[in-house]
Length: 119
Image (cartoon, rainbow, N blue to C red):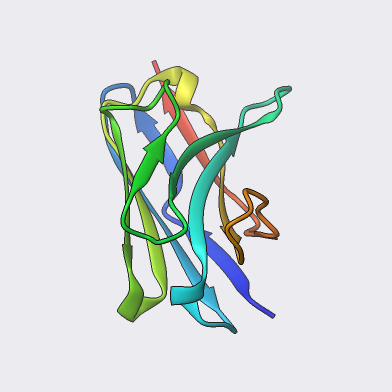
């Protein structure tokens, strides 16, 4: 059973940066398509960024384009989210997710890491 564990969240001032990490264990990382989602207080979980099924392309939510970058290191079974120019509206719990097929259904989720951006 694949497990995803996020880290790197914290408190940062507006305009600052954070880098989130997610390590996958218990499976073959190269067979997973990875993504990041977030959930702000009182709101639904929303898409942030992802790799495509072949792993050579990325996609971003409109609100983070140009500020966030998703990357991965297959040797370390890890996916990262570099977040720059953070805004208070980026405050949320950030979740790492993975899917095991080309269908856009993420079956695997981490426990989440809190990101708080102060104004």
